[in-house]
Image (cartoon, rainbow, N blue to C red; front, side, top):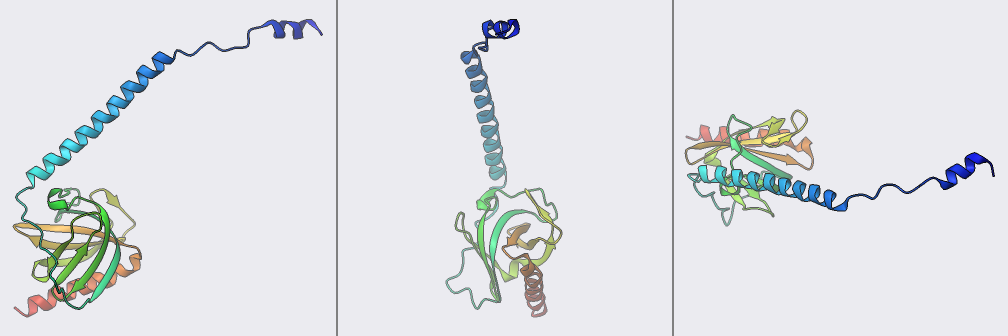
Length: 187
């Protein structure tokens, strides 16, 4: 063996021992901060729902909603104050994202959500439908979101849905708007 090899063999090879207690303290601080942020978000959500508590109960789905004019399966993303795509409505479960099955009938729109409260939008409450690209917490390519505008109590609401097959959206917009036009023409 040469001298260099002997020097390398005699040198210390182990790294300095890590201070485990210091790392655990930083981990505990991080966990507490994350918990605090989640608690503050939960509290803000509850306050938003309390501020919107004047929203009446959502209409129940009628026993016989009628013959389907259009059907859609996909996701319910949010309901917001009409015209303000960032003002999410948290009251009455309208802020809960969920899978959705929509059915349009002459009587209105049946909204069935397995992870949240089902509700019904009567045809008299429908104000129209459009394609959009965003609603509170969800942004998609242009026209990738079906937004149904309806009135409930003294509020006008935009509810955002995205079909499993977004190509269905234009037909829904036409069907809702035709139903709305037919209803207004009958007055």
